[in-house]
Amino acid sequence: MFIPTLRSYCYDILSGSLSQDMDLPNWETIPPKSATALIDQALRDVVTSAMTCTDIVTILTRHGCANLTSSLDESACSKYPIAHGGLGDVFQGRLLNGTTVAVKTIRAYYHPGQLTRIYHKRAAKEIYTWSKCNHPNVVKLIGLAVFHECLAMISDWEVNGTLLHYLSKHPSADRCHLSTSICAGLVYLHKNVIVHGDLKGANILIAGDGRPMLMDFGNASLLDATLQFTQTDTEPSFSLRWTAPEILEGTSSHTIAADVYSLGMTILETFTSEVPFADESEQSLLVHILSRKKIPTRPGTIIPSRSINGNALWDILTRCWALDPKDRPSAGVVWHEIKSITPETLKALEVESERDVDCPELQ
Image (cartoon, rainbow, N blue to C red; front, side, top):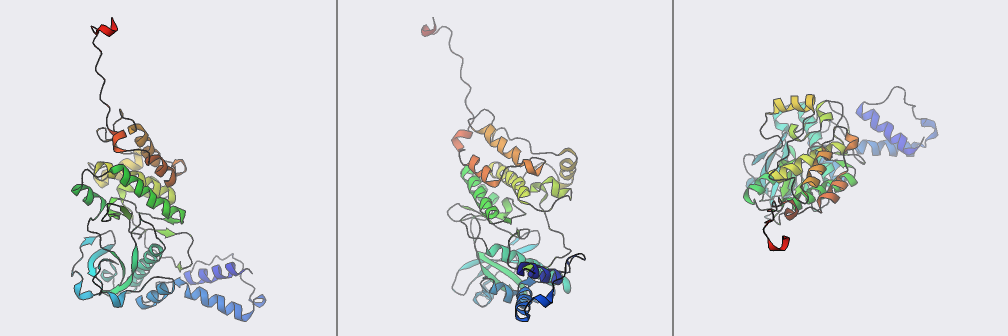
C-alpha cells in the first residue's frame, strides 16, 4: 500500500467516513515501525470535536500558527464585542508590547457541552486556513490565543473599518482601484486552492493606506491541506445577497465559481456603496433568485451605458452572475478586465450638440 493511501485510511477512521467497500491495508506488508509512524502522524494531523481547546492550540502551533495567549493583555481588551459577524464576535485588544489588535472568537461560549468543542474545531479550521495566507489584499493573521476560554484569531486593528464604512467616510475613493485590489486578493486565494466562501463588503477591511484586504475565513476551505478536520453536522453559513443560486438551491457547496458570483456582487457593492438588492427584503429576494434567477438592476447613473467602459463593466458583472457556474469567468479574468477601467472612462459622455446648419463652414 502506498503511504498516502495509508494516511488517508487513518484519516477516514478518525472522521468516521471510512467507506465499507474500501480496500483495507495489508498491514503485514508494512514494516511495524513505518506503520506506527504513519498512524502517529495521522493522529497528530487531525483535529476532532473530541479535542480540548488546549489540544487544538498544540496542533495549530505545530503547524506554524503563533500562540499569542501569553502576549495578549486581557485587561486592555474590550469587555464587549466591538463588531459581530454571522457566527463570530470581534473584540478590540492589545498585546503586551502595546500593539492594538482585533480579537475574533467563534461564539462557542453560547453553546455548552460537546457543541462548544465543535465550535472550537470550526475556529481551528478558520485559523489554519487563514494562517496560510500572505498577500497585501488579505488581512494578515498575527496568531491565535485562548481568550474567554475560546480559540481566538489575532490580527491588526484597522481603524478604517469595513468597505462600506470606509466608502461612507471617503466618497471620492477610486472604486475601480478598490475593485481591482479585491479581485487580486481573491485571485491569490484561488491560486492557493482556497475557497473564501463568504466574500462581501462586510468581510473586507481597509488598511491605513486605503488598501482593501479580504478577511473572515469561517466558510473558507483549503483544498490542499496537511492538517485534516473531521466532518461535523453544522451547516456552513451564507450571506444571501452575495450567494450563488446553486448554493441557495442546495445543489452545491461553496466553490471557486461561487466565489466569483460573490465577487461580482462585491464589486457592485463597491461602486454603489450599498448592499446588492438593497431595496428588497431577504425573504422576497430568496424567492426571486430561486424562481426567476434574478440579478441586480443596472445602476445607470453609476455604470452608465453611454460611457467608454460602462458596458464593459456591466458585462463583466453579469458574467460573474451567470446561472451556470461553468459560464462564470475566473477571478483572474475579472481582475484583468477590471484593471483597465478607470473612473474617467466610466463617466457618462455628454451628448454632442447639433451643428448649426447656418454655420458658414457647412454652406
